[in-house]
Amino acid sequence: MAFSVVSKKSKKTYYLHNRLQKLKGGQEVTLYFFAGDVRAEALDALPAGMEVIENERTGLPMLRKKKK
Image (tube, rainbow, N blue to C red; front, side):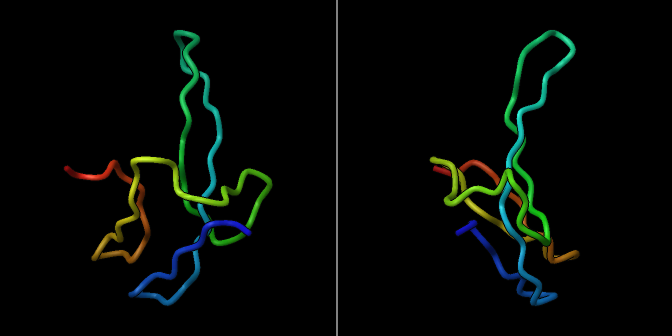
């Protein structure tokens, strides 16, 4: 089951996904994003040390590192 968040503003459900992106220097980074549908890259849980916040203006969820 994919990790999901319901927007407080729009009441829409968003699912957490990730993908590997290769940078120009050859380094690979993991990108996390929310989508309105479940895809093959969907994650079952939040990555360690991350938390979900919601943009107050747009209602879109975002992932960020936990504050100490």
